[in-house]
Image 1 (cartoon, rainbow, N blue to C red):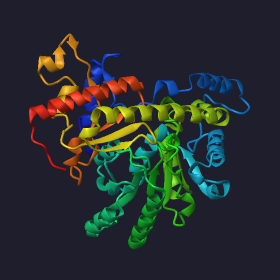
Image 2: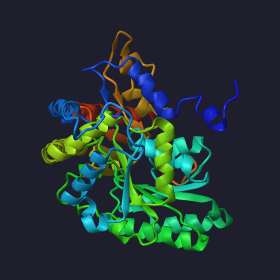
Image 3: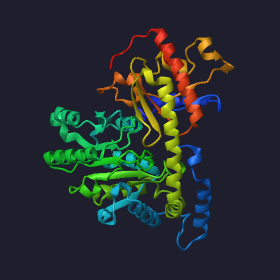
Image 4: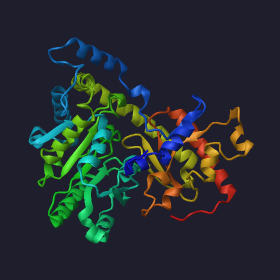
Amino acid sequence: MRLSSYGQASTSPAPVSRMMAEFAHDFRDGVDINLGVGYVNEETIPVTGLREAMEAVASDGRKYRQAFNYGSPAGSANLIASLRNFLIGHRVGGLTESSLSGKRLAIGACGATSILDALGDVLPQGIVITSDPMYYIYAEAMERRGFEVVTVPEDSEGPSLELLREKLNGLGAKADRISFFYFVTVNNPSCTLLSNRRRRALLEVAEEVSQAQRRRIPIIYDLAYELLLHDPAVEPFESVLPLDGSGLAFEIGTLSKILAPALRIGYILGPDGPLMNALVQKTSDTGFSAPLFVQEMASYLLDHKMDEQLRSVNAGYRAKALAVRAGIEQHLGGQLEECRGGSAGFYFYLTFREVETHPKSAFFRYITRTSGDPEVDGQESLRRPRVLYIPGEYCVHPRGDLAVKGRRQLRLSYGFEHAPRIVEALSLMREAAEYARNSQQPVCPG
């Protein structure tokens, strides 16, 4: 059977997908600990509110018209209005009614991921400029589609401006192949918070490159975790949309992290024009629209439940972040070169001084009980507790500047498991690090 080049590249699962599938195959609830999955904590999902929203949508046919039929590819008018009111009312990103004037909001076919996927269809195939560590799921998907991903190492505020300019200058004539810039503002996986001054500076770079190329090159800010800013010491995030005089900046948001992933509500906000028109048509081509009754439920939740939900979810993640950070310090602190995260979202990104964490490392084989040593793994029927994390090797670009350093890094999620279980996993990681050092594997310097 003949497949497209994308189809051929998709016949084998990505390394992270393969690793997660293998681990999930015989995962034991209450025994094994999954710090790799990026699921939200089940206790943050407002099940009672979801039931209430469903009943409201089903019973009020005047407000929620034809809620179980097809909808508009641009999105439910109720949901768009509710999102606008929410953004303005909560001053999300500092947005106001005035700064949102002239900006268009559209709903994706199936969450924010569907909007990211659609960009690969409606923008010209070429070069995507992003950060390193990178949002590996999207970067790998774009490379399967034939895009070239160019990654820029981060500093404490986001992608380094100095290195970004070096990368752009190094492209030479290939700069005319730049398709778009893409940055996750609370980076997954590295947890780096894109500072307000850095996001403004990135917009300025996009404007400079657009002027040099005599074409408009969009810059996409992925805000997936911004509503989960739970550290009161961090400066509130500011949108760049009010500063965008060239019509280049777009922001992608989601309700998955704050309400429920299964709602699959993602949206894009930015200047009206050809790109927004193309994305709406892509939604229509994909499935007419996102499920209308789900959009109407999300509208109800935004109108009636969001204040309480924001407070509850962020308080819960704040408490977990503090507990997990204390566990990291207790069990791994002396072995780490750097620890990022714990201020927004639900990840920590760890860099070890010496211990390697990639799937072939002694650390990984110990913690996943795949060493082949019965004293480490336990008997087949009584395998010792396993811990899953995302190796840094999967988070950095394999041909980028951080490929070697990534072999000593890992991302752990504190979203899904309860804090005591995560601290237990950190204790097991300490054992794994000791085992790795005793194995005397050669260390790759970073």
